[in-house]
Image (cartoon, rainbow, N blue to C red; front, side, top):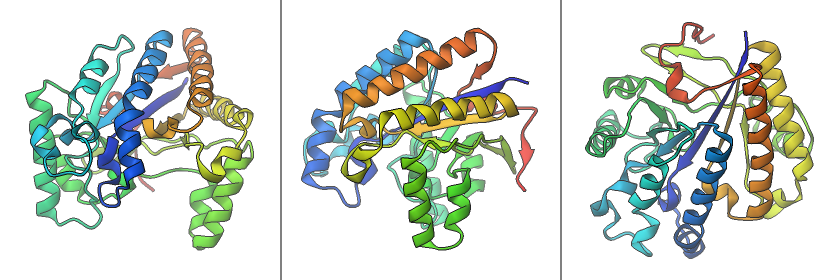
Length: 293
């Protein structure tokens, strides 16, 4: 059984930091996000590798941008979604909630209202509404998620770092730093059935390069990407990479070069039948989905 590569991208602009937004966040959302998204879409088109773009629905609702700080372009981005819809790689447009609320602390009523809003926006723009990425990985109200018609979701990571976090915050922080600095192979994921939904855990974050993370060598990131794909091939599992366009704000050319290299590698492996390129939505009726342990 061939392994699978799934890439998910959280498209949120300033909605991703609405609860603690800074002037620098607003500056970057306005000036940097659009060129990065254009470059990303071009890269995926060049290699014909599809991804799931999980979109905050408010980016398509001008009224939601009213009274938000900074320029409207930080909160309202139909131009990015329209550019995305013209892709040739076969991207899926999924949901990243209505207004980036946190479902682990929201009431069932608030969760339902947010998802109803997201569903209505997707329908009004002719967008699919099958896949869902929980904002900040804050999962909750799975019955509500299923009730609005969503089929596939993600929130959790797999791998040894997640195991280490069970032993305390400090141990988790040390493990996370070691994982980023060293070419530790990421773990493959498996599709897990959660009631009426399918969960696709995440294997690896293509992280930003600001702050201390700027010391992580691109060669280490490339080694992890290659090892993760090979582990998925060997096990028949899923190598699920995820990131935000904002992870390309710093050292952007270097980040894009790393992604360009990996997409080329993945496309060649797919052409030889050694890996399947899958969007999140493609797992909706996956016969290999397993009940969660």
